[in-house]
Image (cartoon, rainbow, N blue to C red; front, side, top):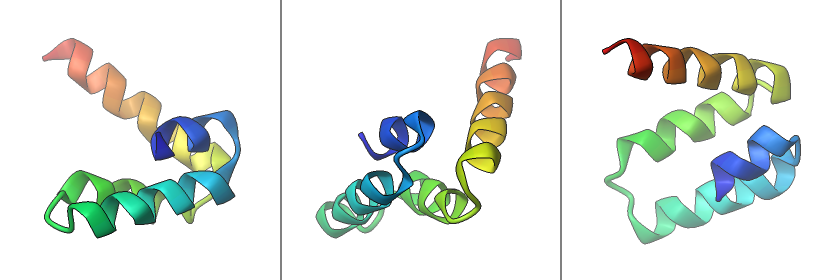
Length: 59
């Protein structure tokens, strides 16, 4: 849910959800990645997320 909030532009709620996810499962590396990415702002988050999706489609 944190990623969805960040993609919609609500970074505050997105970061809050990502932090909550880390409390529940601190071993999930992907959550740390998205949390770090969320501090870069909405535009950076969307660009990197789009690159990840394109890379998934190509493989």
